Image (cartoon, rainbow, N blue to C red; front, side):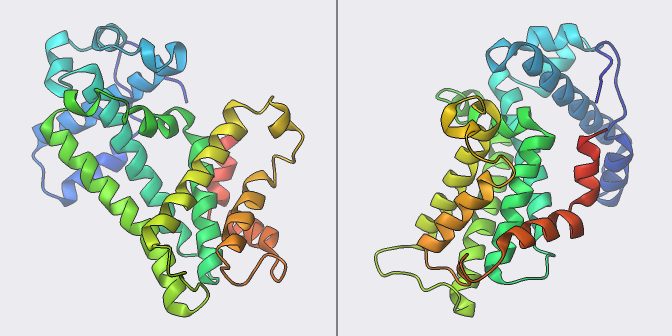
Length: 263
């Protein structure tokens, strides 16, 4: 997607107008939200060109068609802008996760579908995918506005609950027996850490020998199977074709999203 660096674009306008109308915001409030979406898009452009360290509100002002005062009316600091990127990323990831749960399969297959959704977002929006981690850097939280911090914490709480629920459901249906020395929170963290690390290495360090000697099409799924088999989450990979599950998730849930990658 390309952006005009000096004037607003309408990439999200239709969707925003519909959703905002439903929750009863005034026309001026809708305009402000739409403008902030435009500014977040431009921040992504700057980061793509200059890296996260290259982002500043001065550069954002120069890239946009708004005054410095207008920019500061949206973001109190560069860090506040980074947190806005994080909020968009987590919100979008949650939407993909919820779509993944539509998949008709076992609790472990649904978890595979969620992992598919996560790697899909990393491919669709690599900058925003990394923005979640950048927003956790020292000093970012303390320079983020209180209001935005509250929104970010709300989304993080929701995504943690979503991840925990995958394992609680597996324990409830008997496919996963929770060891006494383990907790749902521990399993949830290891699940995220493996997926995030694999996605980052597969995209940012793909020339490393440890990565390029493996099949990129099966790299993540193999790690998922290693982790879930280690948890003794049934059916085990020796008893079930999770590669077929992976293909089904792509075909049945995310076919249109995959097609957009080639546009």
